[in-house]
Length: 354
Image 1 (cartoon, rainbow, N blue to C red):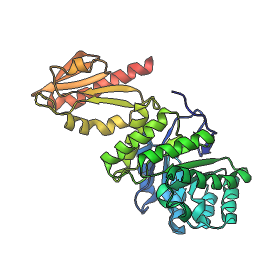
Image 2 (spheres, rainbow, N blue to C red):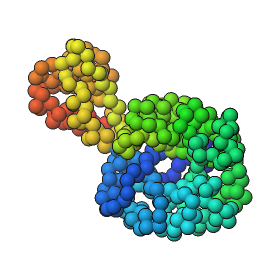
Image 3 (spheres, rainbow, N blue to C red):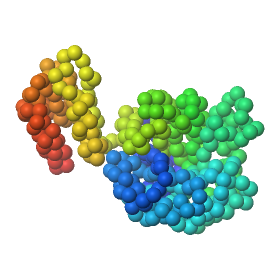
């Protein structure tokens, strides 16, 4: 799988583009009432694979806690600004390493130029974005929405190129997965600018993951995409986990836990659903590459998951823990989780020593 090479863009300590890993992004989804608590949550998101978080800046007061969050969080933050260019200037003055604007609603060209020069002086990146559902009026009825979006973004980019600003990221999103795929594919064939990819307004968990896996998976397979967000109407942790899992599935994420598990069936003797729910939070924080099998049937479990680094299954009150198909322990259900993590720690230590 060949990665399409884009220029490198720095977002604080994070570099995207070039040959750097695809970054996973989410967006803060509620008012910031306690900046210190937000920092704690961002650090927790970082622990499960989040690389940056976008914050909406609707008014100038929102920049006060955002400055604190920027200074104390372990991952970079992005200020999302619409309509008021002064908010963008204020965010850049605080040292926010990346801002997101839509040049179409910032206003006169000179306002966009002021933002460009402020970003250059601050060493910050700018993301410019277009959503298919909010195209300028002249393009609203375009039959080929992907072509319309490319035409609009071409106009915006001409301004940035004229002012020799290259720390730029582009996002071209649509609620239709096919349009989303097509517009990003066309853009990537014409520019070396890093792309933030995502299906916008993708819906609740199952539709969002399905649409995103289709559109973003195709793009990633073609080497397109430098950052991504799987937009979900739901918990932002799910966005991070889904993004990381998609990158694993297409071979763009080398670390972390890969879970193999079977659904419930008539012969299941081990409650896979409950066990995965009880261990998932701890597993999400493991950076090493390790495969885990949680199987419902003691008859077939160890054999069907013989390639897993560690597996677990059972029947009744007996739980079987195995590694690469070989049984390593038989314990009761009460002992299962503790012993499982003891075995996992031993495997991770062994991997570290190799």
